[in-house]
View 1 (cartoon, rainbow, N blue to C red):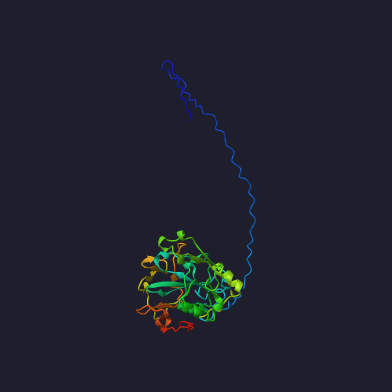
View 2 (cartoon, rainbow, N blue to C red; view 1 turned 60 degrees about the vertical axis):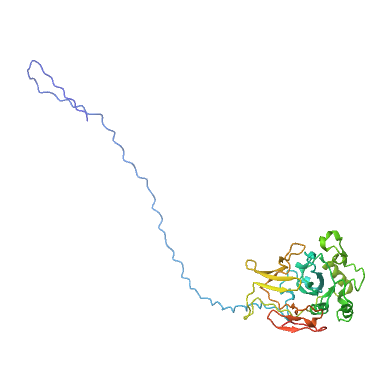
Length: 349
């Protein structure tokens, strides 16, 4: 508010008292009160109580757990898709609808290494050939090997192995004595060999210069293939699935078994060993101190401890002999028994 004072004076005389003029500022506009909007009252919510549910308990039947599958295969019965020579299930069981093949493969001199096809065999038997040298009888069944060899001659042990595994026997060469015996065996119709059929089409020779320098002699040039042999078996009407018994496979080690890092066999002119690899869980073969690799750069004789076939290994006497009567056969559980010429060994324990 502004207030002004006006005083009038004349000749020191006081006239009428001073007049006070009070000037008021302009009136301040009066604001109209705001009108509150009329809000409609919200509807009254009626809470509906849901009906009470009566739960009837349902009894869940107690399921009896299925029995633990029996993982032991053999020695007399095998599932249709399990290879009776390895204990392993195959994605294609039709591969078992044929006869096994027993093929003679060279292992001496060392220049014949690397061999062809060894890593694809289901079983490989190493035995004395003569002197201090060894030779292989490889059993092929579940896998094909396009090239196998070099192919060598049979020995007395080959009077037994084809009968044990009902296998067709493929070889080249034999001594007169062994050849006479082969003509008398009950599996003579399963023999596939140039000795019985000269210039047999299942066998072929490679150029000598393609072989290792020290192994270019004629006896190292003969090869075959599993499909060639099975084709010949088809023509002869002998390539049918066989009832193979005698091998037992158990993933659990024997209670009295002992762990073994290395299993070795010393021959007078060579040395073979199996060394266990912890990271891989398998045994790998060594020949004369070197890893045994075949021509396809695959490890030969890979053996897993998950399956423990009672395979047969051959142990020699102090002096090498040509007769099986001089050998003892050992199963993996340690039992031994002598072999006699002409004796069918059958199961090995």
